[in-house]
Image (cartoon, rainbow, N blue to C red):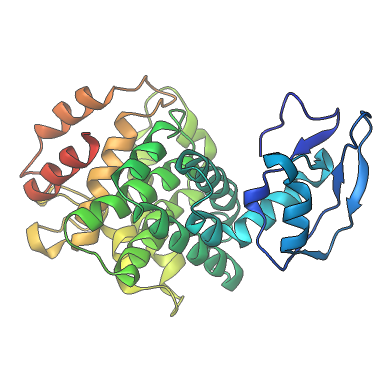
Length: 321
């Protein structure tokens, strides 16, 4: 949550539309009475926020309430828990929904990628993916709002968030329209690079080329990721296929198994397109990034050998207005 320049020092301004009626808030809410500049406690933590409070705080169409900066993490947790309802709220602007979804996704993914096989990580990831599906289903304008805030500096967890959002949109565009299908894809996308948690940070971030041994290990990250998640019976098989196969190529020259053509799961073929696009349009330790047009032109050279032609064509349409 951004700190408003008009907020009192040490406080964060709240948005009324984030609050869900009758849901307890895990932070103290403050107001600044008219004619003063000192925040005073309005409502204590762990008490439900009801419609009467909304009406009192929105008199005259304004909403002036704040929380301590030190409670920002509790606010983040509240948003994560109620994200699906916030996305469904017609009073929240699409651009704000995009920012809340993206920021929440970054925080959560940064945490769960390093303890991916716990029940709590899968629960939180599943809820996040369902919220992402709900957001993407708002339409193409919503998708483009999300693209506008896509991070251009590479971090494994940011890359995973980008692949999830773009991949769900592409999966829907090519015909996977059921919420369960899209959610399964999203889970696989969030964890598609989880195997990189077993790769040294030096190898992942070094500007120079990898050694032969490092490159051989890097090429095994899909298999290592699959091994991490394979023991989870509650993790969809189609999502595991994304983890294992997202670096396979239609011509059989991919890795780690050298799969060919239709032997590659459709979800993995979708993931390969958005994974490559995000890598090309994201600043890496070893190079700058391309703009959208240049990235698509570079990818076009590998349609048929690396990428499915139909999926690539739909992705180009998706990125266009």
